[in-house]
Amino acid sequence: MKPIELISPVDGSVYAERTPLSLPAAQAAVAAAKSAQKPWAARPLAERIALVKAGVARLNDMKDVVVPELAWQMGRPTRFGGEYGGVNARTDYMAEIAEKTLAPLMVEDSDKFRRYLAREALGVVFIVAPWNYPYLTTINTLVPALIAGNTVILKHASQTMLVGERLAEAFHAAGVPEDVFQNVVLDHAATEALIAARSFGFVNFTGSVAGGLAMEKAAAGTFTPLGLELGGKDPGYVRHDANLDAAVDTLMDGAMFNAGQCCCGIERVYVHASLYDAFVEKSVAWVNALKLGNPFDADSTLGPMAHKRFAAVVRGQIAEAVAKGAKPLIDVKNFAADDGGAYLAPQILINVDHSMRVMTEESFGPVVGIMKVADDAEAIRLMNDSPYGLTASVWTQDYDTAAAIGQQIETGTVFMNRADYLDPALCWTGCKDTGRGGSLSYLGFHSVTRPKSYHLKKV
Image (cartoon, rainbow, N blue to C red; front, top):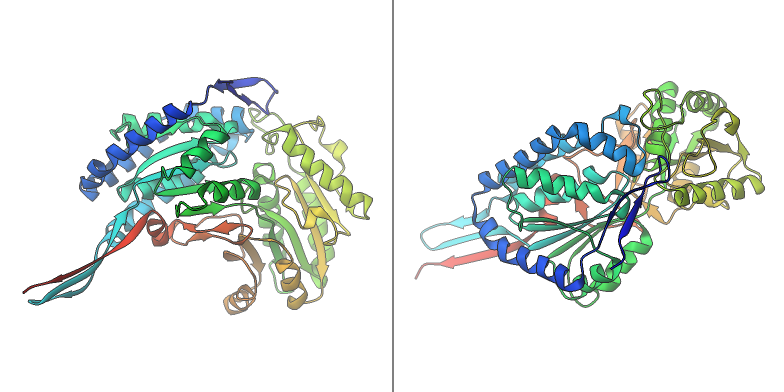
């Protein structure tokens, strides 16, 4: 089979290549995972938790390898230190709530009946992970799936396929059996064939809407549960009573961090007319202070996008918007590292509207459009004018106001005075074309288990 190449955005070189498994080899991996699942689930919960936490601890020990490897694979500057903060916090929280969440819910325990509702592992969980936050997005499902007693097969995006190898290396070194957690390299045909053959008890996919459609098509008629986190076009709304400086700092960081390649990154901002001019001025200054450059340079705050084809999409959206009347406020000449390829200068656009793709289609790059609004009603209408619904960021001084606005926004998460963040105690979920299902929180365990009822009667 033809090897899959990982092209580094740093210099355009082939950083790694791997040969995907043949379908028979992939089927053998599934068979091994199925054989290992019941013995794994039979282990005490405390033992499974300890092994999973030990695997993450081993991953922490590999930081000196993982961080530069991430930069080579997807371009994030090494100064940010990888994804360890979120990996550790999410692992710790899910481990902490596991016993309570997975414990049977007793309805009656008397001399006549014992009735209770239990949670049971789904079997083999298949994770198809993305490249933009390759460790974090995997951990979201990997940790609860293993703790709950499932075995896991991980297929990583080709852009970050070494991530799966590092995770497997860490977990196996910690004592998680190799058949319990397997990393595989698969092509699209083998992936779809495995899903169509009812190989898995649950499939979690993070990626594009087109990818999600392919997953649903492959699973059609199998009744395999799917967790899908797909596209996003997350808005920020700055009300008249917002803390202006805090809003600028958080929303621009949410738009530009990781070269804008964040599932819940800010892609459009609506600002009350009373703050609009000041917000735009401060935002331009904030973005102009970024340093686009090689991710291994200590002063680079913005690295290349993960692939030049991703940058081409963003450049196309910007060019189209400008042709329709949008005004770019960032002088690309101030970012000399912009090479017309993967290295892309950040951009702020004003005079934008929803006839422009940059305000309605996912950009997934370092560009943000800013629009002036008259009131909450206009902001809510524009925020909902999107096929996506992952997060929305509302800037105000009042909890009740933020909640009231949030109730009217079609989204999975409502933020007040923050953005681009996952709280492990809250469910990570979306609506509309963003997908379905949820990870993290106690509901994350529900995604990788099924309810099983026990109605026991003494005669």
